Image 1 (cartoon, helix red, strand yellow):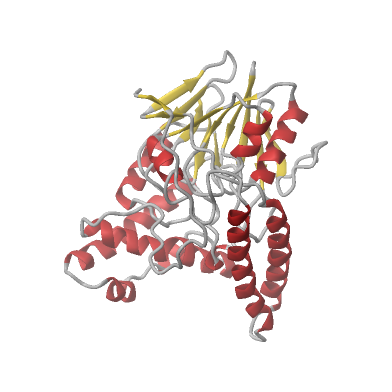
Image 2 (image 1 turned 90 degrees about the vertical axis):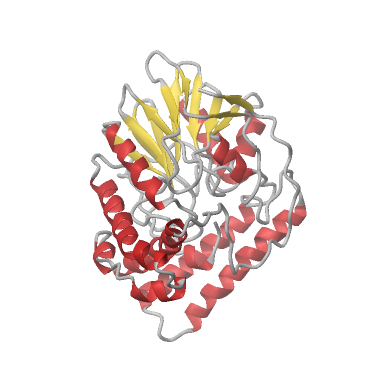
Amino acid sequence: MLSAVGILVVSAAAAAQPAPAVDVRPFVAHEVNAKVHLLSTPSDWYAVAISNVILIEQSDGFVVVDSGFNAANGRAVVRYARSLANKPIKAVMITHWHNDHPQGISAIRDAFPKVRIISTPGTEAGMLGPESYDVGYRPDAKFDRAWTGLAESNKAAFSKLLDDPATPPDRRERVKKALAQLDEMIQDVPGTYIVPPTETFEHELVINDRDVPVRMLFLGRANTAGDAVAWLPKQKILASGDIVVSPIPFGFGSYPADWIETLAKVKALGFRTLIPGHGEPMSDAGYLDKLITSIADLRAQVGPLAKAEMTLEDVRKKVDFSKSLALFGDNPRIRANVEGLFFIPMIRNVYKEARGEPILQGDRDGAPPAAATDTPPVSRAIHHKS
């Protein structure tokens, strides 16, 4: 979600690779192996978070995992696929509903009208509900204006940092770059709209191939109610969506106890390479253990206080997450972002979980209402019960 707190997220790109022959900006292209390719934002990307996009080449076309933040991102995915092979994009799997993952689909569908759009029912519900914050289900200038207004408010917040003499020089440079990147993104947004899934699955959906079969799996709630992963069993490559985000996890609207269980299931797959929703590919489960440890620590601290009828405000004053915070690195910038994007929202989630209160997707408590709204279409997705 676009917010002032979330813009200066630290981006982490994979190891440097030769530049592709096509323009994939704002992404940088990486070859994971001969059949699996990654588009990620570069290490100096400080604007709105944009999902990693994975392209998996099968014999008769590409399976794409996630699609970026806007229609321009989707066009970059199309250009990159065409540079790799003369094959269509035949399917897009959306790992979850957060707007930086599904909103490139319209451009992909424009290029490949028969593309399958696949998610879990939980992700479809998010796309037909909270995702539509200043974005609609059809092209419309009012949504372009609404998003531009949201971006401009974020730019104003960052401009204040430039005016503040206490802002350190290194942060000042990051803010300047973020502002320039936001200006570029504003130009990319027109025509962006939500395209709901054409298919949903309960537990597993397989897109078979002799060399690179893809198993789409729902392992349980984690960062959202509908997180899906793409598992390549022959290559032992996993695309996790935001179940895993590095170096800074996102905690808004998450399910703490379920997240721990889902991370354990991810580990049990025995991956050789894990491609997170944001950040560098991983070759072991060390980072997952950090996530599990930190969530478990919050549950151990917050749960008893919440059950003792302490208010959330008072609970926040009691919780000490300094040890868990140290797990994510000693860089002050990382620590500040982990606190704001993960620990603070997770305290609220753990509090609600302990009290048996619902954790709602897209809960924007205290946030202004959307400047433009749209009526979601009726679901027409084919539902696979497997």
